[in-house]
Image 1 (cartoon, rainbow, N blue to C red):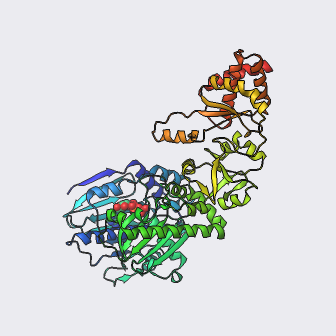
Image 2: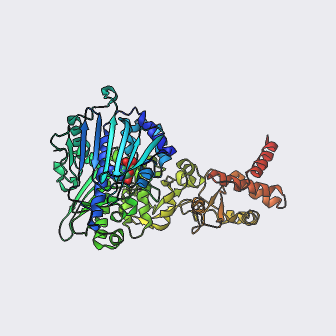
Image 3: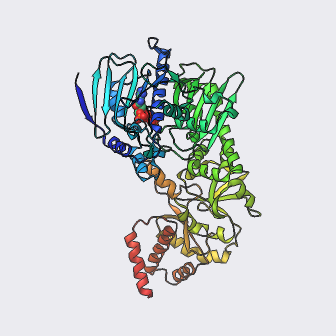
Length: 614
Ligand SMILES: Nc1ncnc2c1ncn2[C@@H]1O[C@H](COP(=O)(O)OP(=O)(O)OP(=O)(O)O)[C@@H](O)[C@H]1O
């Protein structure tokens, strides 16, 4: 049968390079990756066996063969196997999205080993210890198998083989042992046992090893489902390894949550809150959700049904006793018990975060930095427990550098203040310097600075917290207790305001405000209008929204505004007044970080003016 030589896809080649020339300290993890893949393949076979009776599933296992003479370590499973196309598609390329991101991070990271396994580079890690890898596989039920081989350089070979056993055998041709380089002797049973115990003890299938040809087989792992063991009996290290297995994340989780429900509908759950967000947290096709088991049998990966979407970063396992083994995703979505589990798990996760908030501020800060933007998405759904989400939220604020909780904000509210003031925008710096905050600052009102894209949206739909309404400082009329602008004053401004309203076609209305203390003017959105950021977001999503005309507010205390009023009174026909009006409007737009429609014209007007003053 012919052997074909194929090239690795470009990104795959780059990743391989990183592996082959790796300077990563912990090379042992390659074995964990191979065992993890074998375990996944066994899970899939067991699942297929539920519907296809001809598939035998009575002796699913992983076998390790150590051969010191040939310097090979072989990892064999009798799992689902791969077709030729799958071998080429899955091993020769990196199918997952986010590869560019992976590579960038791998290159930049000081400890790149931490990233291995996070993005599906698992199999390639064998090239840290091997100078050649041979993979022989036959898909369950297929007549022939495939042999794949590579030295980890630019190419690999594939050929059809007639007599491959079902499942997958990976033979690692080991490089010479090099203690200094962290390359151990992986043909030594004690070494292999240590690695298996450390990383793969909980694997649900027996991992059998034979040290030499003809020697007796030994089972190296305990196979105990971690979630079924009482928490007090499980070492933190075991939880951590299990987390790595289910989450494909090398860093330790922030929190481990275990939970058991007894009664009419029994289930056990072991959940983890990661310490950092996965690169695909905000991608539609990202790996989200927890694994579903039924009576210790793996059923579904990434079951989004078991937790609400805004908690999609939570990893782990739910093992339900009373579901049918061939439950489908469609049924899951409608199952009443699943909905109950989902509610209970969400509650438990939120309670854990709440405890973190009061008990471990540092941990909470990490959590909120990494996952806050996702958690806040839950506020968009009126059916969610919005209070529970707001209770664990924190926001940047004008009160200080550290983010504040809403409870703390409310506790600090001034006498007579009945609203929670906020301002949305694209960055803290932009929002903080915006003129809209002036009077609030001057009068000592704290304002929340909301700069995540999702903030723009949830504030629209969430009416209050602790009985206090949310109120934007850049929207509608300001309602701070301020000295009323006297009627006489208002009257004297009436002609200017009317004229400006006609001259500046971009604005909907021109009015006086008590919102400003230093700036001459600012722009505010109408109480029911879109903010500029929201407008931009809708456009970015491809929606056609008309440009909202905003309100220009003037500070009657400002000398420029007062002078403009006087000038308009004296010489209403003077054409330079319209230019001043344009400059005033442009400055208000710039001050809030907005974009001028015609920056060149603005610059020219300003330069002409300045020329006259120097
Ligand atoms: N022993 C095996 N049996 C069957 N399929 C396998 C086996 N090993 C790997 N594969 C297939 O090849 C794919 C790629 O494997 P690889 O280890 O590179 O990444 P991964 O396992 O998907 O991701 P990660 O390493 O993050 O878990 C797997 O998803 C699986 O479909």
